Image (cartoon, rainbow, N blue to C red; front, side):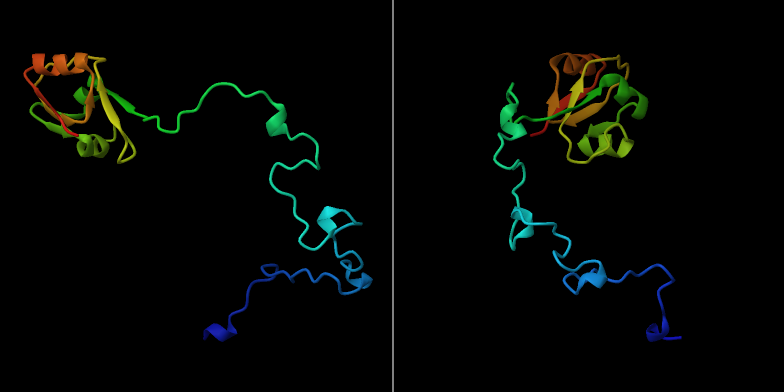
Length: 148
C-alpha cells in the first residue's frame, strides 16, 4: 500500500463552489451576491460596526466607567490554603504554590492573605503578602522574605 492509493471516505470531500459558470450551475447570473448594493460590487466590504450610515450601536449606547489597562491582577492565596498543602519547615515560593495546585497558572501574581491560622514554621519567599499574614507566619516561628 502506498500513499497514492489512499482515498478519502465517502462524504469527506466536497466540490468547491464555482460561481459565474452559467445559470444551470445554481451560482450563475449574480454569482450568489444578490442584486446590486455595496456587497455586490468588487471589493465591496463593510467595516466592522458599520450600519449603513445609521448611527452605530457602539456610539448610540452611553459610556460609563473607566477601564485601567495597567491594572495588576492578583491571585489571592490564604494561609489556610498553605497549611493544607505544605508541612512544617517547608520553603514556599511561587513555583511551589503552582506545583502544589493552589494556583493553576504559572506566572500569576500571587498575594498571600491572612485568612486561617498557621501553627508551624514555614519559610515564605513571595513578592506580595499582607501585613496580617506576615504577622501570623512570624508568630508561628516562620520567616517571610519578600522577593521582587
